[in-house]
Image 1 (tube, one colour):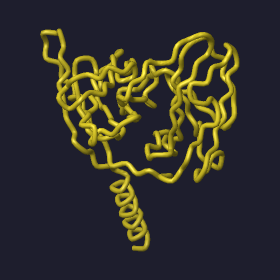
Image 2: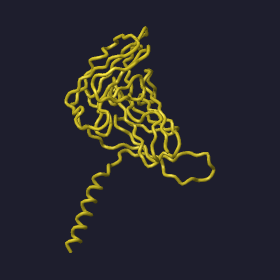
Image 3: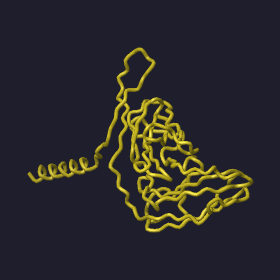
Image 4: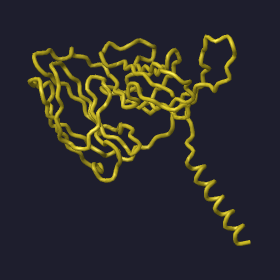
Amino acid sequence: MKHIFFYALAFLICTIFSCESRREKKEEVKHKMQTSDSLEILSPEISFYFYEEKNDYPDAILEMFSPLGNQVFKPGKIPFEFNVKNYPYGEGLSGFQLKLILNSSDPVGYNMPIFQKELNEGTYRSIAYLVDGEGLMLKEFGNYVDRDFRVGDTRPFPYSAEPYIAVNLPADKQSYTSEQEVTIDFLVLGGDLKKDKLKVIIAVDEINYEVEQVTPVRIANLPKGEHLLTIKLVHKDGKELDGPFSTIRKSVIIQ
């Protein structure tokens, strides 16, 4: 009898934990992938959705001491220097905790606040940010910083007051299994979706999904192969922004 009670209790505990581990999907939209095959293929619908997210470090502050705004360097090793406050930098979090994006490239992670990067002549927009334990961007004001600078004899970016986006996940050509969710983790800088009447359109090939809040979007059931992913910041009426970083394109590979 004691054994029966023990197994029943263990089953109940496992059930409770499994229920708690399930995350409720928000604003889920499903699409059937179009195929040129004349035969009907039984495949699950592609699903777009997001979860309720929690920022574990809302008071974290990332300060950038170098480069300064519009600072000009000679080509070569460019110094980057940051200061991190109210965040357990280097204290138990796995993976890279500080990430840096230059001109919409894939982010590069660092576990030291002072480092150098070898850069050629050009005009650069740098976006540095902290991540949580899952590797997702911290998106509260102060969790990130952006800065323009120049290397060599180049012109600054044309002045623009328009907002723009930065993409943390996925990396270009990132691979997933067919059972994995594809996570699109992005940040809007220089503006606010609600106040500026903006929205983000996430497109996989020809399928669109719109979101009006800055939250990681998940995609499930993508068929095997390579897919073009486009993340675009636009006005609510669909009009595109003029800035150079309002649209980001990457490819994902489903194996």
